[in-house]
Length: 151
Image (cartoon, rainbow, N blue to C red):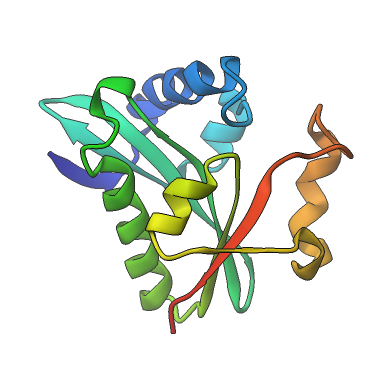
């Protein structure tokens, strides 16, 4: 298995992974447009030419970035793919001198195993909520805010 930056040819696979979980209410949906516009933020896990995991690292401010759209193919769940992607994002954040990463998630147990802790959503800067107004769940968001200090 390899982890690499996403390519244009990965968008349909990434979209399918996210949509699988979004349809089950386990994560927020992402449009193809969002994926294309933010493709440079995405990293994928690939096994024998197949994208089996994906996620993105989105910089929100000088000291903060978000792990977004993290999804792993069901048959690869609990095999270290998600943790591998989170590890890549932590390494990338360190290289960029970003001291903190956060996630808005329904999967708090997973992120806790990766070293994140639950925080109040209101403790995050207003800039974080810029895209929330377009979400169908706004303002009744049930996602859990989690953060990790890495520097």
